[in-house]
Amino acid sequence: MAPRRKSLRLLQQSALLNNESLKENNYLRGLSDYHNRVTRRNTIRNGRIKAEYDLEQKIEVEIKMREGSARLLAAARHRAQSLEAARALLTSNERMSAYMAELQRRKKEPTNKSNANTSSARVSLSELRVPLMWRDSDHFKNRGDYRRFAVFCLARVGTEIHDTALLCPVDRASTDITFPDVLLFNHVPADFELTLEIYSHILQEDLSIASTPRRIKRTIHSSISKTVGKKLAASLRDELNSGKMGPHFELMASAKLTLDDTDENIHTHDLVINNLENKHHALPLFGHFCCRLAAQPDCATKEIFTGNINLNGNNCWGRLQNFTLKTWESRKHSENDRNPTNTIPITRETNIQLSKSSMKELRVTNAVDGCENIMKIKLESNDEAQKWLRHLINHAKDHQKWKHTAESIQEVPYIESARNSFISNKRQGSLYDETPLIESAHTEYPSTRPTVQEIFGLTPSTSLSSCSSNSPPSLRSRSLSTSGTRKLSTNALKSHWPFSNKNHHD
Image (cartoon, rainbow, N blue to C red; front, top):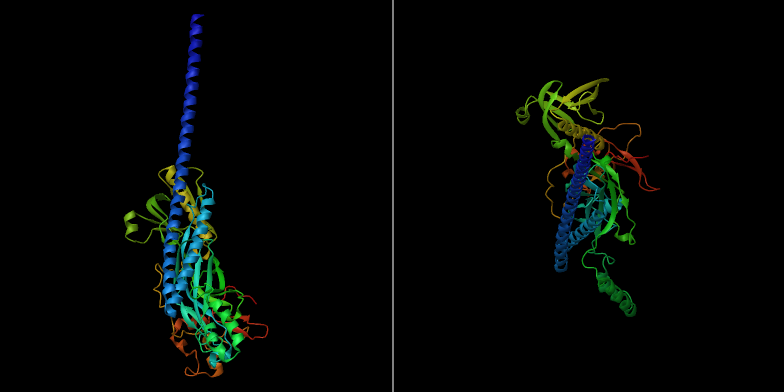
């Protein structure tokens, strides 16, 4: 009996020790999971705090810019100074509003939200031209509409806002407004929305008696009675002293562009024109504008992943970039820009999966001439296989996400172009002169179709638009690529807009 009791006691002690060991292991495992969660939360929190700190720094910069612009506006003695200060002030206000809204949004978003796998691109806006709609007597005979404007544009993607040069004066001699700027946006997601806004200010400096309240105030004593003149003068004094400092720019029109609007060439887009209370201050916009909007995904120009792989039984060095997997005999051959031994497309049509026979092998399948082309990639470890699998799948998804910009790389500059002077009196080349007026609906006409000058028999000496010869030769060929008909009004004739219009409809 004694040996049996001793054996039972040993079994109980062993079971107790195993139970305590199991509890300790569970405790250590739970403690490790807790530490991992705390570390992950701190990483996310630190990243968000850094992003918020960056936004707060940007807000401080814009506050200083705003204060400087306000001081310049108060001290300005010339029209050019006051217009530029007013433009800078409006731009700073818009940026501050965007930063504040983004700061509030980031504070409210969940802590577990991560954008680590978000693919981005560089987007450029250039070749921006906005046609104006004057009457023929205004433009050709230089009479009628005496208004003159100062005009600039704002372009925004998320919190990134850029402004164009300020063009002044814009009057009846200008049939279109051409902005020389190249606006560049970085780290733009594929679902971006670019908002273009056109701002203008009507200049109160011409010989018309109705051009400015100050001029009315100086001349009313000679045209109306003294009693009525005092009342009108008091009304004008209240308007002049209403607290509005400097020129006031009003939003004339806006447009929204997305990834679908990007292209290597210039295209025409629709404008949404704002209805102003004072129609006299409205810029005579045509309702359309043309520009070149280009997008270049970062994954097309930068290395995504590199490493040693075994492709179909051959050891080589692989590099994933620009929606292809290229291989070389060695890393040195890759760095010396030698021709790759293999080039495998990684597109939205590519099937990428782990091999069923081994966790260290990947199968990359592409359809070539109706047949499946299978490439087997072997890695040294399971971790390496998982890394390559993740990057390959994400790269194929990016090809689908970036649509046509992934199939043909569009040219995007790395630096914004130097800004021209904000006051421009030089006459730009006119789309009005280059717009074909006669076209059959069923015939493709060459570049010799009659223009406004040819139809009306105008010469460079008689046309106010004669400076269009300063336009680059490529503009003429581009303007005749595709034309579409649009109605100007219910009583107007159909005219043709020279650039291809993605939003064209009958």
